[in-house]
Length: 118
Image 1 (spheres, rainbow, N blue to C red):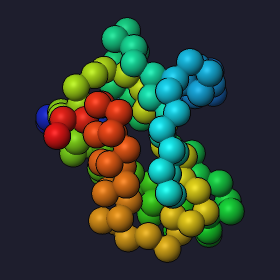
Image 2: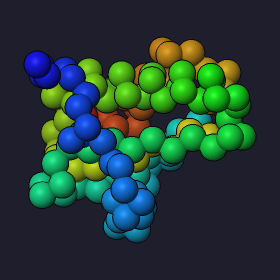
Image 3: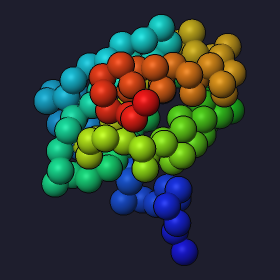
Image 4: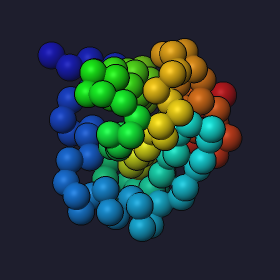
């Protein structure tokens, strides 16, 4: 039974066309190691997409970074001020970052744009 902090498939961007829509129409927010694209869209609902290149590292490292990003989104989704789709792109320098550093960067970027409460 999914609760308030779960991350079911309905909250994921899954199709190439959904990603392209966010890239074309969304607002780009750049940080040191992460780039976020935000598309405010009530009809789409809350959605998250993650893009990590092979240049970031081996599959184990890329999957670990994806888990950290999904966990941040899962825990912070109830505090989003706006409804829409978020795509997070990890740059290669993220490979040396800890969970806390990734969380801090995401929180800073989303608060800076007024997407997240705080």
